[in-house]
Amino acid sequence: MTEEHEHDGMEPQVDYAEFLRMMNALGQDGLGRIIEHLDGVIEANPQDTESLSARGLAHEQVGDYRRAAEDYGRVIALEPGNAGAHLDRARVYGELEEHRLAVADYDTAIRLSPGNAAAHSSRGGCRAELGDLAGAMSDFDVAILLDPEDPEAYYNRGVTHAEMGELLLALEDLGRATELDPEEPEAHYHRAHAYRDLGEIEKALEDLDAAIELEPEYGLAFYARAITHVNLEEYEKALDDFDAVLALDPDNAPARRGRGVALGAMGRHDEAMAELDRSLELDPGNAETLAARGLAHADLGRHERAIEDYSRVIEQDPGNTLVLYSRGTEYVNLGRHDKAMEDFSAVVEMDPDNVGAYLSRGMARTALGDHQGAFQDYDRLVELMPEESVAYHMRGYALAHLGQGRRAVEDLGRAIDLDPANVEARRHRALVYLGLGEPEKAVADYGEILRRFPGDPSIIEERRLALEQAGAEAEEG
Image (cartoon, rainbow, N blue to C red; front, side, top):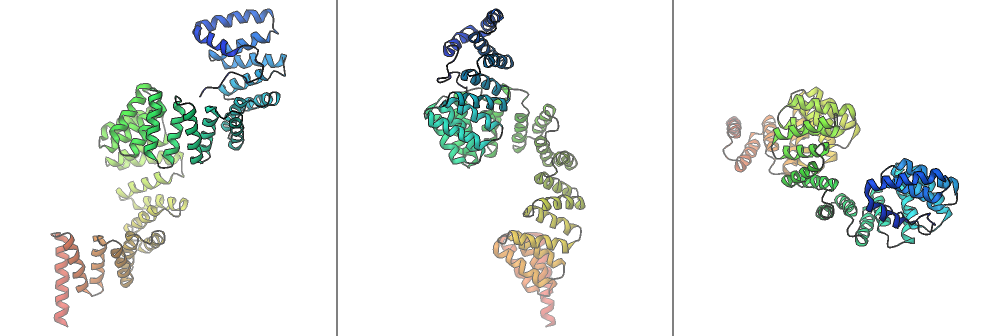
C-alpha cells in the first residue's frame, strides 16, 4: 500500500495533494522540467524552504530518493521544528531502506506534532523492518486508535501479526483492511498466506484469486497460487500459474523450479529436468532447486547424480535432515549401506524422534549383518510408534536373526494384530515357527496369506515344505 503524503496538521510547506495531481498529469518529462525550474529558484534563494520541499517531492516522484532526502534535510536544517519535513524525509529513508534513520525522523515528527495516525503507522512499518515487532505492533495499535477507518494501519498490523505467528489476529486485521479498501490486492495476498498456514486452503485460494483479479500482473500472487496447486496435486493448474509468472518475468528462477517440480510429478521427466537446469542457470547453487533436481534424478534412477545434487545442498546446509535422509536412501539404492548409515545417523543425531531415520538405519544395519544394532533402532521405533505394525514387524525380524524366536513371534504377532494385511509379517512369523519346530503354525500362516493372495508361487512352495515338515514330525510322533 502507498503511504500518504498528507501531514495531518503538520503544516506542510506546499499543498501536496494539488502538487501531486499536477505532477501526475505532467509525467516524467514534466517532472524533469519542474526540477530544473526549482533548481534555478533555489539557486537564487537557498533558504526557500517551500521550493526545497517541492523539489524534494518532485525528486521522490522520479525515484531519486537520495536527492529528495537531501532536499528535505535542508528544510530541516533551516526549520528544525518543521514536523512535515521530518515526516517527508522519514518517508524517503524508508524507500532507501534506511529504516533506523526513518524511525529517528518519525520520532521527531510525532514529538513535534502528536496524534498523527499515518506517522505512527509508517514508523511501525520501519520498526517491523528492523525486527522490532513489538514496537511495530504498539505503533499500529496507536494508529488504529487515532484513525479507526485507515485500512493501511489494519493491513500493517495484520501482516505483523502473521510474522509473529498470530494467524487468527492476522486474519481479523487483514479482513478489516479488505473491508475498508476492497480494491487493495496486497491485503488479499497476505490473508491468503495466513489461511494457508492455518490449513484453510480453499479460503487461501479465494483470496489469491481476488488478488489476481484486482491486479492481473501480480506475479507473487500467481506464484503463491501455483505452489498451492502443487501441494493439492493440481499440477495442470499449477503449470498455468507458473506460466503466468514467467510471462511477466521469463527469468524467474523459482517459477522455473516450480514448473520442474510439477512436471516431474506428472511424469514428464525430461521437461522437468530442463526446467530445473534452467532454474539453476538463473540462480546457480540454489539449495532448493538442487534438492528438487536431486529428487528428479532419483525418480529417473540416476542415483549417483541424485547424490551429487544432494551433497551440494548438504555442503550449504549440513543441518538439512530431509536432504540427508534422501541422500541416505540413494546410497541404499546403490547398495552402499555404510554411507547410508552415516546419513541416517546424522539425521538421528539432529532429530532424535525421526522415525524414518530409525527405520532406514535399522534396515541398513540389517543389510550389513548388524542385527543387534538393527534391533536397537527398531526398539526405539516401537517407543516412537507403539501403535504401528511396521515397528513390531521390524523388531521381530531383528529378534529372529538374533536367535530369540519366542520374542520374535510375540512382536510379529503384535504386528499382525495391528495390521492383519501385513503379509510379510505373517511370512516372517511362519519362518520363525519353522525354526522353532512348530510347522503346523507356519502352515496356518501360509494358509492365511494364500487366502488373501491366492496363487503366489513362492508362498505355495514354502507352505508345501512346511506341510512336509509337519507330516514328518507327525510320523515321528
